[in-house]
Image: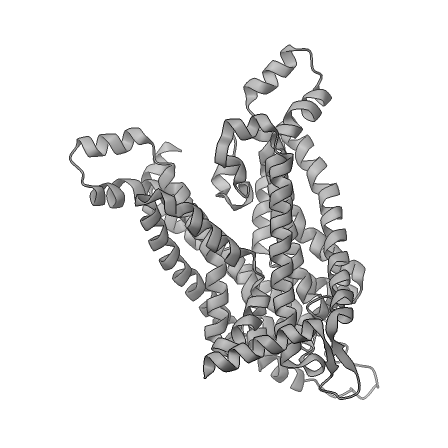
Length: 254
Length: 238
């Protein structure tokens, strides 16, 4: 019996995604592809801009500091603080002190995406085989060319690992934007009075699917940008998600 | 519920006609001092959710890692399955579980536990893999059985990675548990988001958010202390 009622609730949830219905308020139509696509596009806007801004800050920063071998303390602190301060608390803080706006949510999500991106880029550059860097210098490469021609390509798997971690967590966290007054796919989860249980289940299904799609797409990107030489040398190592999930201890390079 | 209780205590306008700090939903130190007791129950529930989810997650992930340590081919499939659980946003899982387990602490715990599995499994496996082969050979040469080797050599040497996994899992779970109130399980998310009415009250945001950060830091330091105490040779090495 429980299984049957659970199945029918999931069925209602799926129906919410494909077909609009009268709201439990009675006067508006909710659900259906039109509304789901509208919420999806808002969701992707929030996530996309946040990821873009975070990448613009964290990747160049991580590359340069990694190349110079400076900022070890910064790298570990950024990742530790990023873990200790819950992203939801950041969103709540920004919302209550700076007011409800898309810009605030995007700023909060950007701060959430920076630690995995920065740490992975930094570690990616630091763990490039020093022999390769020496060889490049021996061939007359300047500092900029070492960074762009050797360290960057060899750290791409980890940079994209960070991008993948950041993308999945930003997409997941954008779900709570409606609690701060900005619409996203999470809207039906929060506004149960309007969307009903079917809306909640339907939105939860859509969010779960979106997260899996983002993960798969970024995993494919990560694999695509990995230089062939590294794939041959490292075998399955390149498929690791990246240093962000590794212990902090390993971030420290000698 | 406590979020509603907090709202119910809003004081009427004062005689000058100005809104009080609480009516403006501002940051009110005096109100916080007077009402600090309101945070006790959400805080304890938050601790409960975090500690139980990490404990269950560790028990499951540790067992899986030990099984996969002997049967290497299992590492791939287990990583894939726990990877999917890790990718699914906890918030979505809270709602997806509702038709099956209803609303409440059980639902929240299942979702939070599922989320920790990948982190813990990966780190235990990584720790066991990083034990140098010479050390294992030396132990075997001294007549250690497989079981003795595992418990007296490999696991102690894997401890830094295992604890690192627990630290990441604990701090992440503290953050995710702020959403448990949406699954009807309470926690600090209740005051933080005024029981799902939105984020309204700056005092709540500062206190509940601050308690989350403090809890995350406290658990992190506690686990670090456990690691220091359990592996004295690490300190000797500097």
